[in-house]
Length: 376
Image (tube, rainbow, N blue to C red; front, side, top):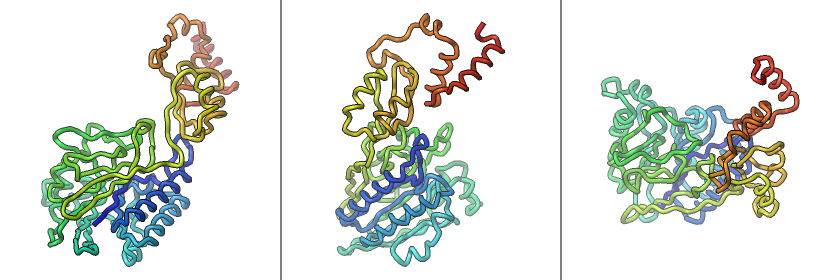
């Protein structure tokens, strides 16, 4: 049996207010193409389907098109909700979906839904759908259990899943899973829990042959190769620029074999670095000018964002870096001290907000500085 594992679609997400609608439509079509070419029996979508618990009509249309495409090629679809999703919205129409081999987790009510799937070779697999849960939610249904953290909460739920005669057991889950050997890598685009309080120890999943995880955006395994985050299908932050994206393919035959198939986006997310003039010159000959760009420049200049967007129209952000990071010479303190205070403030504002002060804003800043005697 062949499974395709994807997660964290984050349909509806924007990057610096830049719409990703076409990027997401494109990459979902690519996933459908891979499902077809791989002749997959099932696709597992492990949570954070939407970027918001209140997705727009456009976002729900994108998901509808995706599920319809999957139905049209005859693949069995399994989908759970993540911490970004609304259980009620994800589960809407689940009874009708189920009749058409689209299985969606409903709101957690103390039980994990399991579906047994058998392929043409007679290999049977239990696919267990555990949506995102918190200790407080689990305690409600297991008042007599000792639940004091995420690990004990998830373990309590997982231990209730029946063991059948199926050859393999597969679990879908959307949690932050770590192992005693270390924590997995996280990205800027993820929700971070302070102090790692949301950790679930990987040992909780020892009874499963493959664990299809969602939540973390970098493709990686935790503890063993068969407990895996497939990662997002698109790059959603600056920290993901250098990491390729993929879907995970799981073969369940005589053994469990895990491999990946690369995903090539409509637009890449890249970092360009150096002097503003050099970046602009390079951009004039760049074969992919419509990529989503994070610019790191060595000195802030007037109209930097507007000038950059003339060659890179989808520039997301500009930040200031030290000249030493690119082999140049750092601006000295005396040079900074010679700057007009309003100009210095404007450079800081551009660095922090990727926006230049208007003439009216500059006048307001100058007035406030004069009134507070900063400019004396």
